Image (cartoon, rainbow, N blue to C red; front, side, top):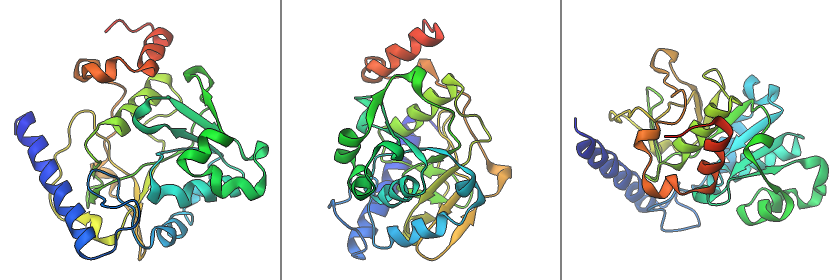
Length: 247
């Protein structure tokens, strides 16, 4: 399957899921969910499912996406005293660190939001990112092999690649997500070289561990695949300087 065909298949599946969530009225603000990591009814319940994991309980530092459905996990992490490293939208401001030791307890619900993270967290350079114990990612869809589908921008994969290049995660770092049951698909999702699979997903009704036989984690950034807009990101320039990359 060509690169163009892969992108077409992925986009068709995204549209199918976005439409389904809207039609079944399980989508939550912000709506419409098209073009987003969709928020959904029961995202809080899915989060409660996921925090049963031993990998969650053992984690001291978690990295999270900034999207709405994973708000509940960010808040729970902060309430448990975990440090949260959050990617800023489209990586325009790199990464933010939220340390609950320096946030008033009553402000944690606000700090777990995108706007609140900028207020109560602080931007950090790549060299300041601590070792990460667990990754929270947002998804539009996940299949039975753990292959995920994001919203199509490629930033989640770029975030993962940056963290691998820095050596603060490795292939054993667990990746988890919360999704609605309608986002679990039977279709094959094409797995591109820069994609990664999730290790667990939680829905409002179940917690699922994916088969490790299908596990795939890229070892870093595929520099030749970076689009011009991503090459111009400040965080990419910083990474190239840190790792002495010239590509």
